[in-house]
Length: 251
Length: 259
Image (cartoon, rainbow over all chains, first blue to last red; front, side, top):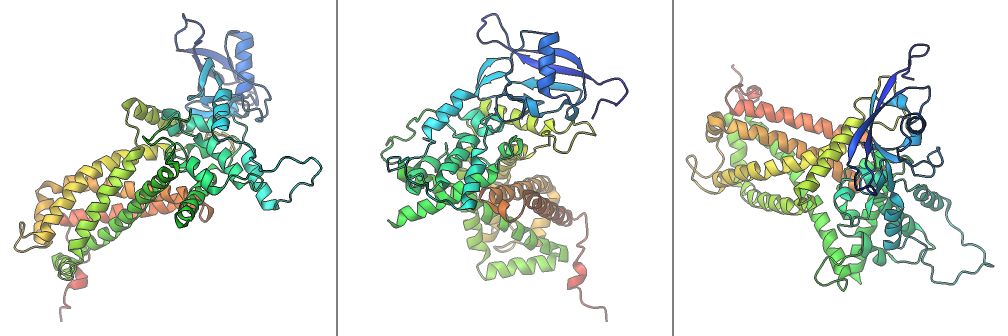
């Protein structure tokens, strides 16, 4: 803990981005709030305290407080993080908060990640493409435990958008599938129940909006609050793409 | 993210377009790999100056007599241009986009820098430098394109024509005279840029294709650092010898015993 036990608590200075796109009179600006640090204070607690005691107009999103709903992603001193999972004791006295870039701004720290993720899911058709009609009576096909674990690993994504916000390419190319999108694609490529062939995926992944748009800056991997192995995901996509390119050549 | 058509053929040729894209990616990575390995080999060869002018001239002569140097100049310059053309396809064209990336990279690097001393180990605010490293790879790449072209053309003239010195070929006397006359400055800048660009580039290439499964990212980064500092150190000593500031430290290897 940074707040000296027994002594006076640390005085935290929050510099928060304020802008309401709905209000024509609103201009983007930074607003400062000061707060005494409390033990085990998260940004979730701090922001609620600011809203309750200092400024009821401050907009931000929270739901679960336990890093599972993915709604409290924000830029904390220039780095995307979940507000609920970030303790003020890990931060300096001055804490600058911005909304996540890339996504549409709703107001202040609140952004619309939903539209971006829905477009990504629709574009990559991120659902199981089965050829046969679903038979509720039939027994489920068996799956290797290792493969099931690998698929589950990709499924752990909470769609908070931290990876997308940290990605230099996603910041400048709105067509880029993005880290979370590539993770989604890899998850369905691995799934034996999905009948799309490597050749089908090849056209989706092997281009500048797919895995070859990635510059290898690795920020997505470093900021992911769920610590998804994103670098391994891209390496997997690259190797699969390479295999598909050479398999297609022989046909 | 709408599915815009990006080539004139529309989606009719999606498969061949995808194949073209993977060839670009492979060629840009492979040319970078070959150039980085060449640069390290080149540094060792130029290191022959540490044994004195005789050793340097003998090695240069061998490479020229057996026609190794001549095709190498042509092949390396071609690869150099291919790599520049392909690697630069990923640089955003708009200055506003570049500024956005620079800003983002700075923020990510600085977020972890001002942590309180007693911040918890699992704090999400760890320093992240790879985004900034990419920006510097672009910058050093631009410098290498200019200074490297100058160097390769100059040495190409040395190897292929009798324009400088007494006969075609690299000669220690000419090289020392040039470096002493002022080329030490562009060469020092080139050295710094090349070692950084090659080291970081190979580290990134290894991660991209999944070497992280065999060696952890920390280990790969450490290897990159060791290679960077080793070749940077060697390069500085070579430049000092070529500038006639330092006597060749390994000259004793080629001197006849006194008795």
